[in-house]
Image (tube, rainbow, N blue to C red; front, side, top):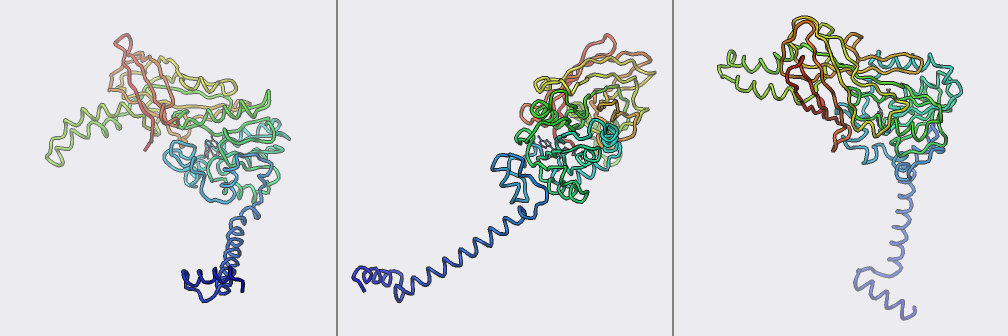
Length: 411
Ligand code: SAH
């Protein structure tokens, strides 16, 4: 054995306590083989979803990091997990089925989209469509059924896994391409003829998803293309809601009767508290005590993202008879090309949006009392999905009042 090798063997034996250098080499060789085998096994597990994936995403260019995560991970990229991001409606994750069940179970909503799409089959025939915020893919399927040549089902949460299955079992893998990512970040291989999206939140703008649809319109819609829906309106009317007032304010006066503790002093705070948050409920038509006023109308074909930074409108309502007003009820409608309207009005069948209530200190009115004012809506500066709302109102020519409401995490 040459003297150099002898010296190395000596060091190994001295410091690592091995019998001979050959023994060391065998141990190293075996460990190397083992790690190579393990590496191949792990890589195989990671690659499996890629190999069995039936919907092809390969023609969609996305940021490399998104592609990797989309292909090998069950959970969404970290940036989508914030409650202030695309992943929440009413505090639930869009990656969870319960919220999609609620939306699809809302017959007024889902059937209206279905009718709007299927009745416009002439517009959809052989056309390219983007479904912005595709969720479980139901609207994409309607578009394909209406005759679309290709539908890009763009979705930011990992409910895309469900969408893929739905598309597969409906035999539409050739026509519908699932694109996982925020619409602002994905890149489509072509421009589209139609954009379909169900973007509406409570009081129309809560969740602030409309800018994402406008982004898609500005970047991916062909000149002269259609947006479904194409118009949105917000209505307002004075509301008489004794039940709400009883529950939130009168309650504190009644505590003494049950527990022998006078808590009526809390009523003052309760009065204040009810006028700083929007709450959502389903209102019955009898509670609406004046003709509704259309405060805001948005043309989705033309409104800009900048204009949504402040949406504003005036109102003037003439009251019906003697009533005690507890607030204003607000609801929206959207209109599709062809004229079909999805309405969340208290005069129509209930939807999962209900109506939004802005409470005011109780005010008596009589026949023809005028309640006038303005409504100003901003996305919250810090959490863009939330809204800050300013309500200015005045009874006949008496002094004007101004209230600021937050629409953040709703119950
Ligand atoms: N189109 C489905 C789901 C509508 S809910 C249906 O009608 O049943 C809105 C969906 O849009 C959610 O699944 C949400 O994750 C997704 N979304 C919201 N903002 C998005 C964005 N910027 N990019 C991609 N998807 C978005």
